[in-house]
Amino acid sequence: MDWSIAETWAIIVALGIGTFLLRFSFLGAMGGRQLPDWLLRHLRYTPVAVLPALVAPAVAWPEATGGDPDPARLAAAFVTVAVGWWRKSVIAAICAGAATLYAMLFLLG
Image (cartoon, rainbow, N blue to C red; front, side):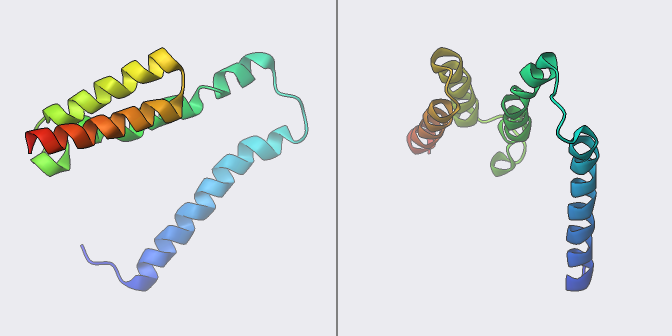
């Protein structure tokens, strides 16, 4: 499907406005009120939940292998989870996973 430049920009702007309105509907309705502790505790885990959701398709069905599982990516995912669980650090987990992925791709070819 071919999109013109104007159509592409119209879609990007529409998605940006929709995203803003969706987020503002929650934050704007709350105003300056204090959020309950149970909600703040749950919101702390949002980045931790989003990152695996973004990476999971690239691990389970990598485009580089035509959708077949790849030992390098599976090992990198395992190391990332293990380091994240052990060190409780997102940066350490990401760095360990990236190092494992590049090392496995170098070793396996």
